[in-house]
Amino acid sequence: MAVCVAVISKENFPLFIKTIPTENELKFFYTVHTSLDVVEEKISNVGKNVNDMRELYLGLLYPTEDYKVYGYVTNTKVKFVIVVESSNTNLRDNEIRGMFRRLHNAYVDMMCNPFYTPGENISSKPFERIVDSMLVQD
Amino acid sequence: MASILQRQKSSILDRPLSKGKAEVNLSTFALLFSEMVQYCQSRVYTVPELQNKLTEMGHHVGVRMLDILFLRERTFKREVKLLNMLLFIKTNLWKTLFGKEADKLEHANDDERTYYIIEKEPLLNKFISVPKDKSSLNCASFMAGIIEAVLNGCNFPAKVTTHWHKGTTFMIKFDESVIARDKTVDGR
Image 1 (cartoon, chains in turn brown, purple):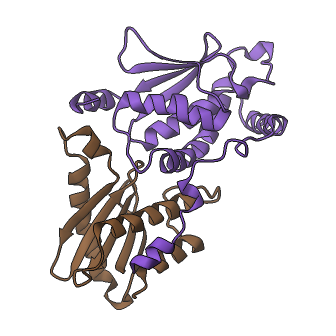
Image 2: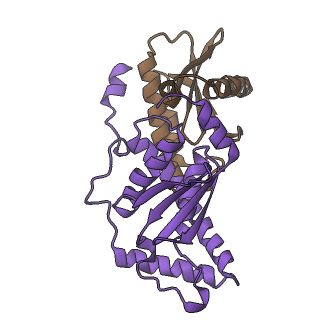
Image 3: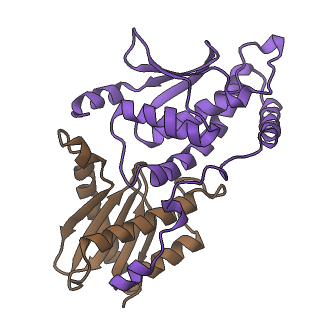
């Protein structure tokens, strides 16, 4: 399914990035980093319909030659970015949405841990397990 | 692939809490809260310092409540309007924390940045009798911390203070930028 999952904090520093394959990590870091501008643009859009602005799921941020980048912003301005391969055509918008929901659920589960300080890097095992389940190829 | 996604059952976070289970024994909570107040008191010298310390503790609760409440009750929507956000605090947040809505939400007549949430008898203060020499102390500052963290987390920077007025009043003073932004957002 996905090749890269990233969680980025409110202040735009990465909290968690995991990629498959791991040897090309840096490339995905760049991709995720560039996507932040698009996210910023989408959520600060003034004069848009209120109901559009309330949607957490931002949809396709931008396609590159090999990958498609999808974005999601929680109400606390934590950003989730999922990168999928363009060749993977059987991933519909709804499925991406479902993945983000699962990611959001996992994030909140992790957030409710009293020993986690907001803004720290995410090292939670259950969270990582959920991300892993999204990364596996089928 | 589709079958994998379908098989995934809706997780417990997707459903609202069942009403019966959400309750905590009041005495237990009162004991915990009294210990928290004592802990804070042993580390400060003045009343404002004590209130600040309680507010700070509230922040920790607030940031966590915010995320989970939005996930459970707002069905993946963001709140962008100021008034809706305040109503969310007055109803949803208060209900989750105290099992009832806040008594009143008011807007200051003379200042558009200021809002009041009024609670006649806050649950937090139920078993607290304020000593005579510290009459300005209001332990509901803890609640102010929760409100502040929720508002700040949602990008409505605000300062929340606690006052003795018609019971307990939480005074919410928003940042200039919040009011300016709210005017540019149209619609309901």
